[in-house]
Image (cartoon, rainbow, N blue to C red):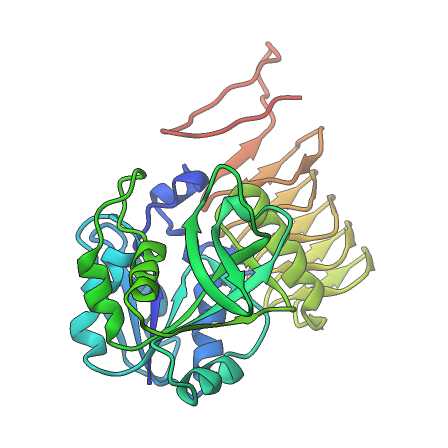
Length: 352
């Protein structure tokens, strides 16, 4: 059996960060989300994995994933972002006639996939879906179930008459390719996977499902990204291989090789990447700090700081923030107290 991970979208809700870094590669607790997805597939026994990307992000995916996993990853280019069903068709040559597992690359699961895979393989289903009961199903695809069977799917309805949402884990056989060719573009301008599965339902193919009781998150927005970071930091094991001097440390701390905490207060859970330096600062809970970061005389908590950032002499607290790679936040030292910015397209700044 093969695995397919979809990463061809533009990540518009996370711009400007996703202008240069696909959301599936944004470090969450210093580990890109897609790493966890690939690990779960490997643990389930799947060794052939295809990743659907777009022309713009193909290079960074290959660079980030090379030498990270002991298997050959197959990169499949989706020419334009025309929806999930369109992405599936691009993978037909890679999948061939096998049953396969498909995962949306911006979804986070904390469960093994093996039981789901075994249940799919041991059934006579053409499609199997993982569903979850949630409070805001209208933000997702919604499944309508009667007498234990799915009768209809609806993509992000204005009003949902079911609380059962479609997660990003599917099992398919080759029938899905014909279904994807049969549908038309939706009002959203996309070829919806829900429409393709509805076609299967209406034409007598078997669509089965499981209801998930465990953890699932669609990591598609700033808020969801921060909450996913909080969740993952809470599950890490403490490990200190860096150096701590004259500092107050409490809670779970992961301090990586050659990282230094000096004359500071640090409250976990927190991860500090290799070669980063924390001086005369307070770093609060649920903060992920990448590699080569320098934080001096600053107060930061519940944030994600990517590699090679420089934060110095900041009087007010930085909270619930995502700071992109190589960014610099420093105090204005001119005679006139003012805020000065050098920012690019689609940036967001919240002022106190």
